[in-house]
Image 1 (tube, rainbow over the protein chains, first blue to last red):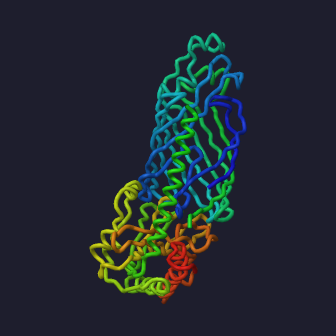
Image 2: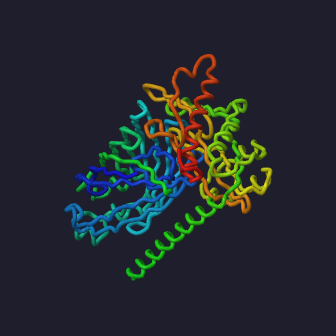
Length: 233
Length: 246
């Protein structure tokens, strides 16, 4: 499946300003298999275990770098390198219209902490072609995953004018997401979504968020994708 | 350093391309050498009844016996008719239940790593031995909705808020197993018959209308599933280069 989408999202996590980013959509499935529900916040994943209503496997997320010279709010805080989060996911469908999903990932690069995501999605097909879904989200992050983005050390405090702040781990955010998708035909599908996230704990209390940003984070996205099979005869 | 990395990537790509070309060549050569075949079919003993979409909690699928419908006999008859031009098809005996009992592992890598379970069964269970190849037709599996698997022959209902949609399916895969080495020469799942349905399922399926209710519904259902098989079998065998196409 290939496609193109766009996201209107915060400049960086904790920012009060937003930017628009084009997003490529690219998925590979085994020939003959069908696409399944996917939430906008889901990491890239492969279901190595699939018993119908229970799936599990490895998951991967790329967290882009944060450059301090791109946004004035970050002046003096230095750059945070891109992070690569590797881990696994489990998802369970107690009924066909309810998905419970959890991910646990370990960061490398820009942060070296642990991240856990938990989400639930009620998936309601209105008709064959039109599906809406919505549900709560919760994220927990360890100190090493929170510190690089929300902590302010003495050097950064001098350079940025923000007070020194030691960001610890814990509940990172709670939120709610909703998605609508319409399948025009077996090949074409269009979708739109909104994800709201309220930063919690040390992330919300960071001077970067309190003095220069916002703990309310909203992402709006839309996209179109085209599915096709190719076989080698 | 970067140049060396590019060289390794290029070398790996060349090895993959050469390996794939060699595999295709070997498969084509093996198929050309086949003169006599036997056909095994084991998809038609049971039918699944599945609900997906907006279903109630604890809604598990059901299975009913349809062995009286003689679908496997129909498949063997149809496949024999299609293959007879190119191969000499000989009747074979086998325990259908043993073939039907084999399931894919839920752990995907296990299916990739383990030896194909049908190879051993063909070696131990099918008589006569010594044919050039055996065509083995067994159940395939697909997702329906988000959290339901369907396989083989079945009747499914996809429930949405505003309407319910019924469909029948005949999901099967075909293996060509070498009669001497018992290697799987070729394996393919039957593809959807057309690309117009919106309840997506990875194999031959069709919509069900209200005529499937009431008296004689079983016979109509059998006829509809037989039609799916009859229409999809030439396409699948054609995709496998076993016949010249539908």
